[in-house]
Image (cartoon, rainbow, N blue to C red; front, side, top):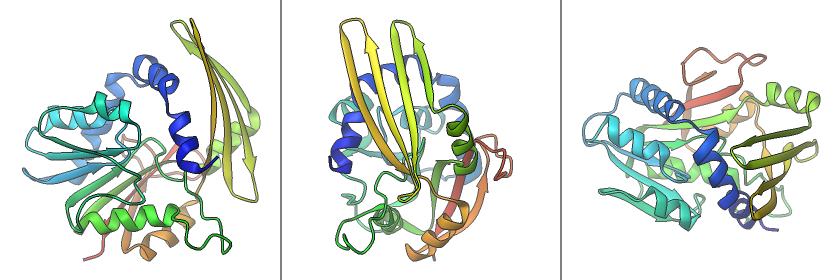
Length: 257
């Protein structure tokens, strides 16, 4: 299955039900939006783009906190885009390797909740296939000089240690039951996932492959896209990134001037 189709299937109705109702509480979204606003310090009228925007949880919170920001979102999932719709919000259905905005359109591009890594480079045998490098190039293209890119990634080291200790997990919320199985493709440097969601009257099984990047790899990729590494923090509380203990690696980069 092609990456785009597999991603669209995984982030479908079952995922949306669980995450919107049980796994992403409003206070988490509020804390993330508040950190981004405090760190990036936008001016009134600045344009921010969220890719992929999902059902618009960050866009709605950013609009609530800073009504004078001009916000846009991009996603492949029509249902998410319908849920994200609100007045004065520019939404587009598109693959974020090919964004439908002009160069230099935005002051910030946000890629949150493990949104980067679903198009791992395939090597010389697929030289024309857009991959993660194309995602970064597109983000840089639509950024203004000096504009911000925020990559919210899992910390590879701590995540793989967790997967080693617990390759299968089960959890639920309300009437929903979720079983996930994880693996590690060392050759492709990809985390593999197979998930089964069950709810009254329904069941869905899907999975994904997510390229996990080390800090050094991200540092090498950014300049090739015209981006400069600024810092990495370990959470949306803003503490310094710890390669051993941090759960997340939130990378802040800027478009070269």
